[in-house]
Length: 244
Image (cartoon, rainbow, N blue to C red):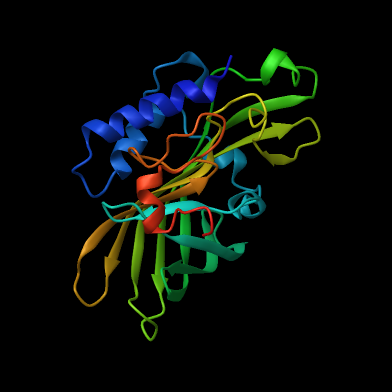
């Protein structure tokens, strides 16, 4: 069963009916809290204290290129995390990276603050249950807030704010692992998702800015791919062409 297809379908539907909004962060939280299908249902408890000693930095730093857009016309934005380090407090992670939109490149730094560490009510083991005997102890989400500030001395800088989520699992060896179990079995697999806004320092204009690995939250009609992300041809001139 391609479970991530189900989740993404509901996300895309929500994007269509709320396409005039700028900030989708609370919509994302609602989808995480109230998924339509059992496999994505979360236990009500916040298990932050249980998992607070684990270092999620290696999971937060993406293993693939982020896919992202900024603005209502889905202009492509390239977002790179150069480093992610756990801060002195267990809930804060320090992020350094850069963004690129058209020819405008900006360095940024900021924080991800973990607000919740949640467990799924039931475990998922991929297609044909191939991970059933792999020693998975628990699975869930980290849910947090992010705030990244671009260098004010560079071109067209601003700040990013919003919410993020990331799927993980705990194995029998006590290791926290990036959950890619459904990568090969689901056409709509996604992880490491960011939903929020970018605000121009000078003009105070706010734009939708969402990104993630493998898929992008609330990407409307930008993504028409089935087996993998595929941008529509009408957005090729927004940085999504085959040569970009």
